[in-house]
Amino acid sequence: MEKRKILIIDDEVTFTKTGKLTLEKNESYEVCVENDPRMALATARKFCPDIVLLDMIMPEMNGGEVQRQFMADPVLKHIPVIFLTASVQQKEVDEHKGWIDGAFYVAKPVTAKTLMDIIEEWA
Image (cartoon, rainbow, N blue to C red; front, side, top):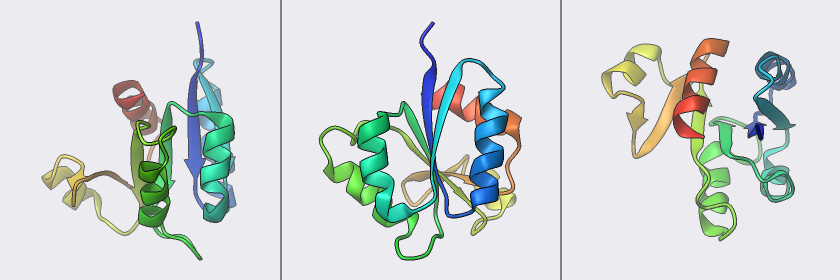
């Protein structure tokens, strides 16, 4: 079986390392991380992910700007992008069933089970 390819874009190195290690324990996933949002587009084009887990608040380029780049790219625009952020509370996410301002959000901190459930649903 082919592994699902997951790209995690987040400026927090500890979060991306932990996320990669945790998700790759499930042998169905191959995970690539990018800590510099300015390199996200190039990394995604090279890795060809099935899903992107994208932090919203990052220096120099926020998650919304990264997503706009993806949407403008004919190769990447079909890839689901899930925002992971501490800028919304779990209560707010629950009230809107994840959908806020036309995008799907997951509140940080996030559990491995929640991430895997999202990947199974979206990828």
